[in-house]
Image 1: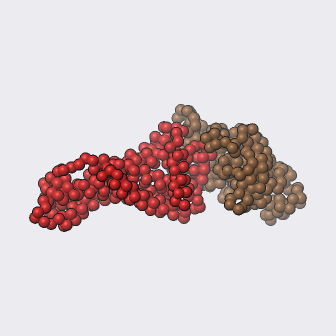
Image 2: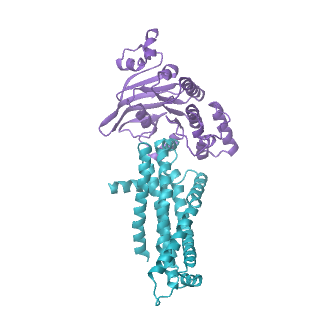
Image 3: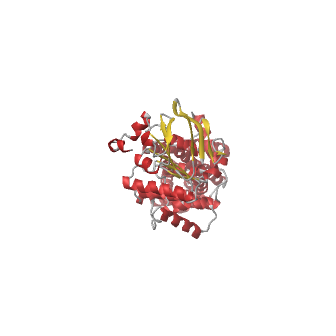
Length: 244
Length: 250
């Protein structure tokens, strides 16, 4: 069953990456999707990341109360865990819920209202026209959102730490700037690129093969989010294992 | 002209089409009729390639379609216009964008040329100045007319209509029927209409193919349909009290 589904997914992707009929129309659709996936998610990602950063600072401080450990370590731990894990993975899971369900419902509704049939009758490669712009938007905008998430999370840690008094601003800044390894950012952006692909392609697949009515579209949407989250966590482990 | 030969299609153990052959000529309105579950929509979908028949062939003006790859079908599909039962207009696009969509995809016309074509098609279906409305703002009859306008945007050689009158009041149904007939004669298209509406059958049925339980049961014109002795066809034609009342007048 899983192998059959995976095979169907690969065959759909083969159609998705066929040469577009008209580049201009695909470009326009891609920019629209970039606006929806990227610009439309900045606020949500910024709020979630800021609070995660602030809470992380407080929790690290709570666990590292000792005269032998310099407080600057709070900034360092917050920075590394944010860059390596929290920003890419939490952002991806949040985006899977927001973007993934929207993509699945949009394409699923198009399927049950015969709009996809209409595209195919016109001689248009429906998977390419509907899914390719979403995938391109996903793999370009999710890394950008993760960069915003990293920034906001570290900033959130700074504000949270300063307001609560667990760490001074100077100690926090010293912590986040000392012993920085740029390779962690490469790992985070690699993860973000992969997550961008997962968040767009899996819900598109679930929506594209919906059969039935509104209830089935809703079920496909839920399934898409669940499958996305599990796939993201599996890929998170594999990428970390391979690159770290 | 579209020719179908010995079309078979089944879903699991359910044989929906059991060897149907017919010829649909250009310039006349061809109707596929039959009761619910008789296989008419499945036959239509086999003809346009949305379903793959297990056996048989479909030819568009001697060009064999059934055994072509998806890639090679594109040239024929560009010559097909289709009106769907639910209109299948793109929700996120305005009326103008819906009709312009095939022009954007397959022509290199300038924006003003495309707009002229859109306005011509809208005028043809009596929907002038409705360019900026979204499908959600249209009535059922208006959606069908926009569907027809989109279908004829590229001057198709073949026009398929899947139950064009479903969900419409009798007056609007007649308007849609007449529009289909006029377009067929005007552009000499090969038009195939799937319907179970007797008003359409009597009004525009130049050639009628009657399906019963997945088989071709009868073929003829609207002038002959009420005069046959075929039991299944008579049950279909004279099912309504109105048709029963006027039965003797044919």
